[in-house]
Length: 423
Ligand code: AMP
Ligand code: MG
Image (tube, rainbow, N blue to C red; front, top):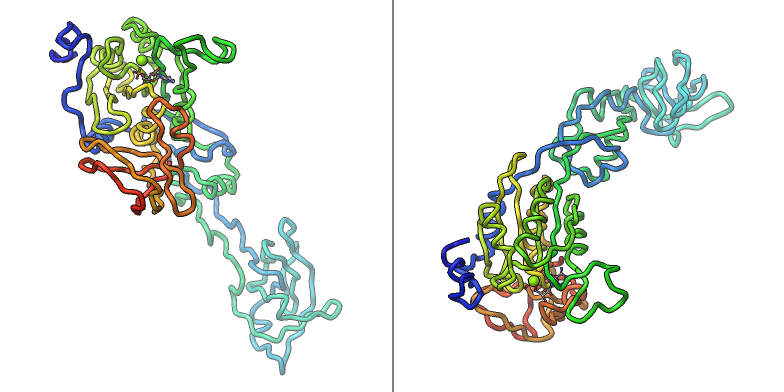
């Protein structure tokens, strides 16, 4: 606890501990980026479960692909020299010696004067060195007529044409897209070594909070159901983390200590509620007690009372992001700060924001000293503001994205073309 905040706690501010300087968002982002590194550890997962995971190591090709000279066409495998002179005026007739299909090679050798009916994907029979497309031929019983010359290699995918044994086909650090899962499967791999997912412990704090099932239907007066753990769990999982939801934390320092003890094994602790300067807000206190606070208070709306800290644990660094309890404030900051943080810990690349231009349907007002994230719903080319209040849980569920109103701007008029960043 800083001297100023201690003074506040002792009564100088009537139990409140006001913020010192609030940090611009960019600075908060920089501090988070600077601190957070991809977590250590890797695990083997089934190829079928590996999509979206981050490869932990390069995968060299265990064999050539294709593993044999392969036909790239349906047609006839020939010795190119047999048909080198073929024209309409002087066609060449070859005797059909057999057939080759994918998975069923021709057993013999293509002798001079013969050809083999060969399908796409089938091995080129021994002795043959070119394919002639079926469309360029005609057949009479066991004789095939050729009217075009062929050269060696025509329509043949030579062995190792795609990948040679030992070449790196998947790179450590790459995210496993469907295409990359397909590559692993095509080599007959059953498992892949992927980075461990970061573990995020989730804490919801407040004397008023209930778990689903604690009451039947409407909560008793003054109480509410916890929205934030489920909401943040969804966001963290979608950002590549495993989550550890902890029991609800009451507004005492001891309850916070117990929760932080229970979260000892997590890479990141994400708390909601109690992050501000009220009498019962112990979030900032526990951060200062357990770790090194990197910031407390950022110049955004909603979500100003947000703090970030680093705790030294035996296993290395643990990070803490403490956000306000209002679901709207909490989720707004989760999008702009938590999601990038979790992706960094998971080794996932930064998301490229997806934006749309639209016309604002009604004026927005904004505090001049804070960057505001104003939730809007997109209705065709129109951006409809949907913010009700920080405490209203449907403010964000009705929104498709947000408009950023920069510091220094107090009002954005209806009819303004705005850039909407999609969630
Ligand atoms: P706090 O950040 O603790 O000052 O809480 C701000 C507001 O958010 C209060 O109205 C709380 O009741 C509400 N709140 C806090 N935590 C949660 C939660 N987990 N789910 C829903 N509302 C919450
Ligand atoms: Mg509270």
